[in-house]
Image (cartoon, rainbow, N blue to C red):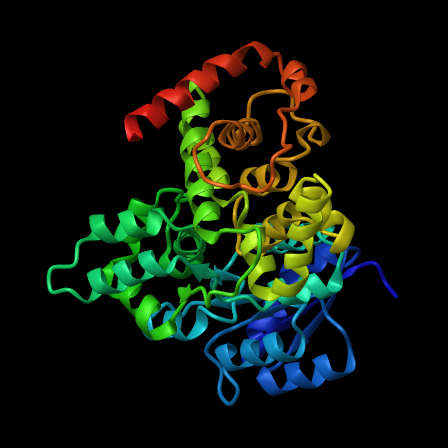
Length: 405
């Protein structure tokens, strides 16, 4: 079996496929590429040969792109699904949100296409468990807090719905924040800069799109209240929000640039999103993880490695990688429990998230967080020349907590 990435490109226009062949000729040593003239031919090819990635036009006769990618999601769950299309109507967006991991505009230059495919495929190195890859690849939504979900729907359906109120509600929920940021940073909306703020994201999408996504497409779903002993979903959400806020404070304390501050906040809020995936998709096995951690005085992280063979950090990073989040955010998620494995020797979003996560466990912010033995990695901070800054970060976080109280 070849070690090359196997990629199939689908379009009903032969000239487009020929253009892709010419444009990507330089990738022949790295990619095994196939080109299918339409949705049915693509399905025929997939039935005979395994592929890693499908890049499909959206507007095709017969089986269109949305239908094709839905079939691929069901039949070949590990495949990465990328849309390449000039169609950006509201109807197309709403039909395509579910099955697509990434969306690229048409026409698309070679470098953008190479970078996008390379980025999303590199995330597979983070998670080698093929069963988990399939489970995560099929995710269209993650469970939201029922209270916040209800507030969001009520606000969206009110006659005087406010962008500020909608953004405030979404910003307090891990799952809704992740999905909104995924969508606004896709090429569907033609945003040229990377958006990390929920208020900006909601403004760019507009209330009509957010309402349609929430009510029609249902990209937000309430958690079905599976009972997991020793685990509180409310605590997880509260902890995630605090870590996001404190990561931002720590980055500001280091006079980091705006992008680093924004990435630190987003990565901090989403650092435990892998736990939502486990709870949603592997609730029984994750219950065993929690019991093992409590009964043997282990961290949840180590219990996950022992029973599942993968951690919430890796799972969360893989999901956000599929959804097109930046390398800095993915790196912060992946290594927030083992930062010394990263070669960057200066303050970065990972530094902020690692410190904020530890401080949020040490300082009594939430009730009953079961992972009690998480400690700051002093070797990591010393390697950056930042060990003496920890007390300053702690003071900033405590001041923030007093203000909230």
